[in-house]
Image (cartoon, protein in one colour):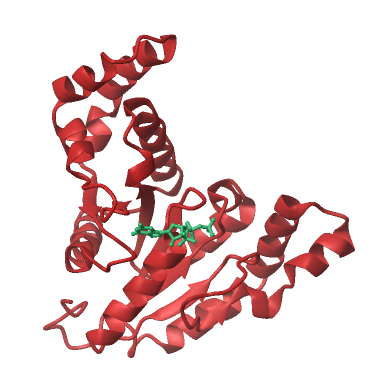
Length: 264
Ligand code: GTP
């Protein structure tokens, strides 16, 4: 792992890595694996868990939303269902995020990375005021990267793949931050098929030709539209379970931050 800001006099600020993705895509497992990887490189990260409903965390979190808000009690107190409970817990936590920022600032000199795990249901974070507040607070103070985790093994149909990419694209537009697509679970299936689809429109069309629904016509048009999104997208194949692809992952993170800082 290249030290952030190597060669400069003052230590560079930590890079915030915000891990987002559909439920079950492997966010928590990836954060666990990234944490272990950084520890093995003598670069312990600062780890934040923003999922109030997670049962057991497989990594030691420096800040855990569950220490501040008890989501089951929030559900009872406000008469909410599970999703409302998670959103409200995140809202309550966001009101105290300035304290989290102070903790991160104190770690400026010791951690190169801040890893942030987000709630299972992606929209709880990406479409909530609290998710926006937290993202903006981090990104306005520290170099920040959004990592969209995709379950590669569940994206082998061209239509499912396309809908996943549209979702990724909408998050890029919403956050306007450096963006990395982590194709996870490459121990089940190699991600090369998806990379080919992104690089070669005709190969994607061939895969689509197996489908004859209205949706496939729409997907055909959408894939042209997404061409621009693909052309600047940073993609890395990883297996959170095996820990493969992580060196390349951190190279992409550094590249994304550098490019963003050059442009803005
Ligand atoms: P939420 O709990 O809904 O937030 O899911 P998540 O996105 O945090 O996913 P999580 O890490 O809980 O993983 C979901 C399932 O996928 C678990 O059974 C993991 O063991 C499995 N999984 C995660 N990463 C990988 C991987 O790289 N390969 C394989 N084969 N399974 C994985």
